[in-house]
Image (cartoon, rainbow over all chains, first blue to last red; front, side, top):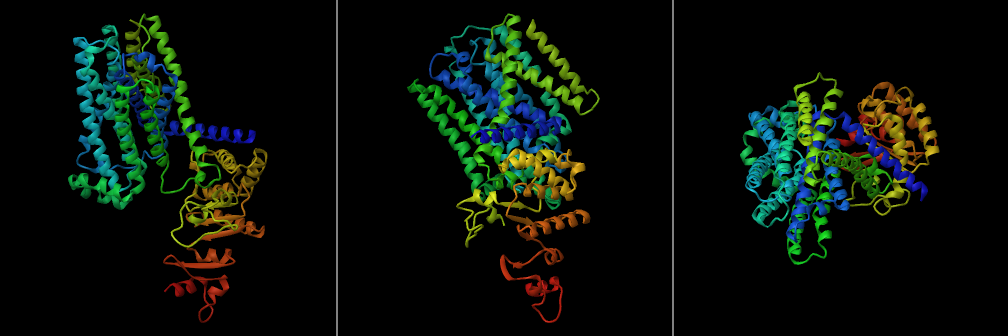
Length: 434
Length: 195
C-alpha cells in the first residue's frame, strides 16, 4: 500500500514536470490560447450553472458559485482542456497549415481576430448578467453581449467548419476537441437568452457603477487576445494541431487544389470521416448527445424539484469534463503511435487520474490565489466581493502577468504587445481601485 | 507484434506469450515483456535520467534497484555524457539506445523490436547489436522485425519470412539461405522465396 502511494506520487510528479516543461517550451501564442480557453470555459460553465440554479428558484448566485465542490469540478475541466491544448501541441508550432497557402489567408486571420475579440468580451458579460438588475444600461450591455456572442458564435462556427474541412484530409481529432467548447457556447448563449427574457424578475440590487467598471476592465483585459491573434505566431500556433502536421508533403502539394473544392468538402468530408471512424463517432455522440440530454433533464428537474438540484447542476459539468478529458487524452500525443505507458503494467485508470489531477491542481491553486487577491483589492476599494468581479480580475491578472513575462523569457525585445499589456494592467488596476 | 504486447486485438488466430493469452492477462505479459517500435517511445520533455526513473515507476521497479539499474544501463549504452539532456535533444541513435535502456530496466524475459536500427548511425547500430547479442547470451528471447537481411543473418537463431501478411517460410539463417540451388546470401534467398 505504502509503495503504491509512493508510485502514484512519482507519476504525479513526472506529470507536473512534463506539463511545466511543455508549457515553457510552447510558443507564447499557445500559452495565451490555453489561458484564454481556460477563461472562456470557466466563465461559460459558471454562467451555465448559475442559469440552471436561477431557473430553479430565487437567485442566490454568489452563494451557489461559492460552492467549493462545483468550483473544483469546473476548474478541473477547464484546466484539463486548456492545458490539453498546450500539452498536445507544444512541439508542433513550426509546421504548416492549409490556410498558409490558401487564398483565404487574410479572411481566416480576420475571422479569428474578431472571434477572439468578441468571445473575450461576451463571456464576462454573460457572467455578470445574472447578478444585476435590469436597468436600461444593463439591458443595453446585455444586448451588446448577446450580439457579441452571436457574432462570436458565428465566427466560431465558421472556424470550426473550416477546421473540420482541414481535418477531413487527415484525422478528426482537433475538430472533436473543439466540440466541447462549442457545446458550452450554445448552452451559454441559450441561458443568457433565458436570463434576458426573465430579467424583470431579478431581485438583486442594482450595481450599475460596479458593472460599468467591470465591463471596462474586462474589455481592456480581453484586448491582448485579438492583438495576439493578429500575430503570425499565434495564428500558426492555433492551427498547429497533431493531425494537421501529420500531413505529408504530398498532401501539402495537393492542398490548394483541394481547397478550391472546399464548398463541396465542407458539406461532405467531416461526416464521411466521422462515419468511417466509429470511435470518433462515439466521442462526438457522447459529447453532443449527452450534453443536450443532460441539459434537457436539468431544465425539467429544475422546474419540478429542488431536492436534487445541487447534484444535477454538477452533471453537465461532469459530463463535459469527462468528454473533454477523454478527447484530450486521446489526442494528448499523436494517437497513431502508442505511448510507453500504453504498454506498461500500470493501470491506465491510475495514469489517467493523475493526469487529471496534475493538470487541475496548478489551476486550482492559481484560482485560489487570484480570488484572494481579487477579494483584497475589492475589499480595499469598497466594492463587495462578487463572482463576476473576481472573474474579471482573473482575466486581467492572467493576461498581463503571464503574457508579459513570456515575451521576456523568449528573449524578445519589449514589444508593442508587452507594453500594451503592461498599460492594460495598470489601467485595470487603477479602475478597480477608484 | 502489437497483438503480443496488447496494443492491437487479434482478428483471427491466437497469440500466446509465457503460456498466457495477452488478451486475458495483458499486465502479466507486459511485466515480462519489452517493446521497442521503430519510432522510440520517449517522453520528450524528460531528461535521460528522469525518463528511466519514470519508466521504472511505470513498471513498478523498486526505486533503489531502479536507480542502480538505470546507472548501469546508462553506462553500458554509453549515454553517460548525455544523461542530463532532454530526450527530444538526443540523436536518433541515442534515442534508440535510451529506448532500449528503458526496455531493459525491468529485466524482461522477452524483447520485441520493430526495425530497431532504422535511421541509426553506424556506431550506435553496432553498439545496439552488441547489446542485443549480450542479452541473447543471457537467455533473453528477442523477437526482431527487420527488412535488413544482414542484420537478420547476424543476429537471428531462427528467421520467419512474412509476405503479404503470412509466414511463408521459417528456419535458421543457414537453412533459408541454403534452401535454393547453390550457395546464396540470405537476401537473394529471401528474394527468390518471395518471388
